[in-house]
Length: 441
Image (tube, rainbow, N blue to C red; front, side):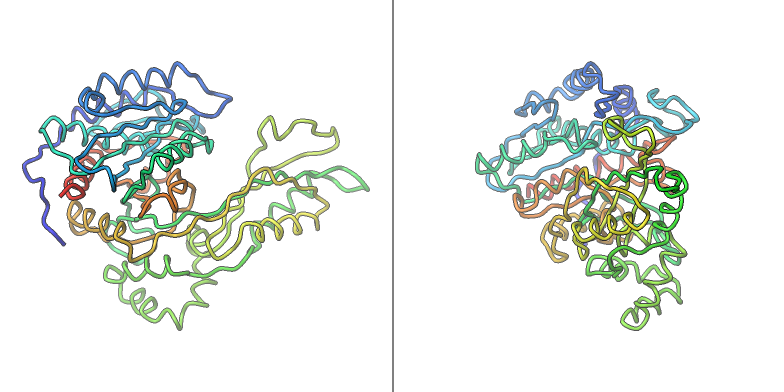
C-alpha cells in the first residue's frame, strides 16, 4: 500500500455541509409525476456559483439536464471520469424531518439525496474545486459527469457516452456510484468494509394481472401468488467469482467459525447456498435472483378491466442467470395461478469488471490509503447504475462512492430519513483528491 500524498490538505467541513444542504434543497425528482424543471435549473445555477473554478477552467456541456464538465490535461488520451447523479426519487414513508430541508445538525446532513447520490457528487465538485484553487496541473483530462435522470434510466448518460466515443475518447477509468463503505455486510465479520462494485444485476419489470372469472377471486389468487413467489427460488443460486472474491477478502476479519467455513468453501458451499438466504435477506440477492412486488404506475394501470387487479413484479438477477430465462420462468409460474403477464422492460447483466483489472487495483489502493484498517472487497451491486453505459467504452468501470454509511443510513437509500455525516463527505473529498493526484502522476 503506497503512502497518502495529501497530508497537508485540511477539509472544509462546514463548507461541505452547506454545499450538500443546498444540493438537497433542490427537489430534483426525475419521475415525470413529480418533475419540476425549475428545481433542476436551481441546482445548476447553484453549482455554477459554488464552484467557479470548475466552470472557469472546465468545458461544460448540457445533455438535456445531464452535466458533463471536462478539465483539460496535458494528455487527452486516457481520461479519468468521476460520476454521480443529481436526480433523486420522491420522498416516501413517514419521515421524522422535512425530506427537502437539508437540515444540518450534530455533524449530520439530512434529506433526500444525501446518500443517493448528492453526498458523493458534492465531494467530487469540492475535490476538483480545491485542487484547481491550489493550481494543480492535470496531466490527463478529467470528466465530471452527473445524470439528471439516472433514477428513471434516462438517456443523458448514454448520449454522453456516445458523444465521447464519437470524438475518439476512451476513458482509462470510470468511477461511479454503486459501492460504498459500510459496517460488516455479513455476520461474523468485524470492522468496516469498502465494497467496490465490479458488476451489477440484470432487471425486468413485469405487470401481472388477475381477473375474477370462473369462480376464482382475483385478490385471493394474487395474495397466494405473491406468498408462493416469495418462497420460490428462480434460476440457480451460486457464489460466482465476484462473491467468492468478496468473501476471500473478508476472511482476515472473520471470526474463527466463519473463517473455517469460507476457507473450505469447496466443502461448505452447497450448505451455505441453502442456509445463507434464510439467516440474511441480503444473501438471497448475492447468491441468486429476487422478485419484489410494487404498485403499478398510472400508465401500467391504464385500461384495467373492472373485474381485474394488477401488481408489478421487479425481477433482479445475477450474471449466471440470463434475464430472459428468469422472466420466462416467472411468467410460467404466474400462469399457474391464472394470471396474465406483460413484460414492460428488461435489462441484461453487463460484463463484469475483471478482478485483476488495473482499475480495481487503482481504486483499491486509494481506498486502503485513505481509509486505513478498512477491508476492501469486490462485490456485485444489487441495483443498476449509469456506469453500465461505459462497458466496452472505457478500459475500466468501477462502482464505488467513497462514503461511509452506518446501517440506518444504508437502509435510508430510496427510503425514509435519508442522511449522511459531514465527516463521511469530508473523507470522500479526501478520496477523490487522492485518486485525482495519483491518476495524474
